[in-house]
Length: 104
Image (cartoon, rainbow, N blue to C red):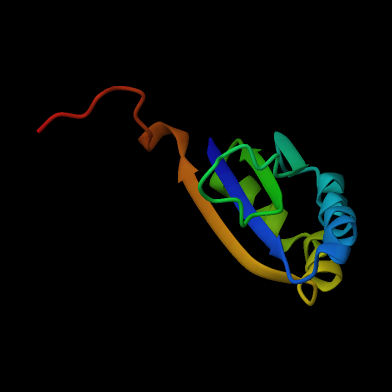
């Protein structure tokens, strides 16, 4: 399984809902096992620069690639790119993640 996490900040606060709606079209893409779009709750006291999060889970790397190749993905980019400031993405294979303390 591949986990895909993308975080966005808005150039202008007034565009926050427009970006959220633009990213929400991604939920129409059927290649994800799970896809969520959420506002950042900004609970952390140190860093709250991120406004919106996309979280996805994909059964295989092929599903992830198909998601990125879907025309709806480009539609979302076209709706959002000019309004967002920062975009930070991270992808990882669950099979490579640890849930244990790592020692030397």
